[in-house]
Amino acid sequence: MHFVFMGVSGSGKTSVAERVAEQLGLPFAEADDFHPEANITKMSSGVPLADRDRWPWLRELAGWIAGHEERGEATAMACSALKRTYRDVLRTGAPGVSFLHLHGPTEVIWERIGAREDHFMPPALLRSQMEALQRLGPDEAGVELDVRGDLDSLVAQALEYVSGRLRAPQV
Image (cartoon, rainbow, N blue to C red; front, side):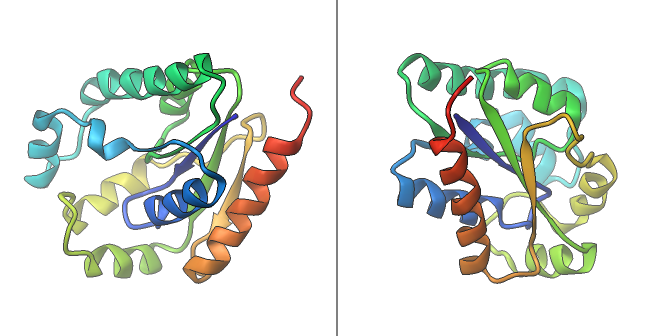
C-alpha cells in the first residue's frame, strides 16, 4: 500500500504525512524535493506550473512509488496531487495507491500558508491551486480529512485510515 497525502499548499499534508510515516516506520517522500530547479524558480517567482512542467515530476514520483513496491514496502508521500490526471500518473507506480486529502476552507489554508516562512511557494499561488483542485472521485481509493482540526487530531485520523488499509487483506 502507498499513501499520498494530498492537498493545496498550506493544508498540512507534509506535517501529517511525516508523523504518520514516522509512527508506522514507512519510507517517506516530500514531492517538493523532486521538483527540478526550473519548477522551483517558476513557483518562487509567483508563476503557477503548467501541466507540461508537472508531467516529468509526477512520473518521477510514480517511479519512487514503483521502486518501493518492488521491494514490498508500503510508503507515505506528501504531494499536492491536485487533479485526477495527476493522481492517475501516481497510480501507475503501484496498484495500491490511496489518497488522504487534507481539505478545508480557503480562509483556514490562507492563514496557514501566510504564516509559513520556510517554503518556496508564495501565498499568492494558493488561488491557482484552489482553482485546479479536483476532489477525490467516488472511484478513487482515499479519504478526506478536515484541516480545521489540530495536528494531533489529523494525525490520529490519518493513522486510523492508513493502519486499517495496511491490515486489510490485499486482493
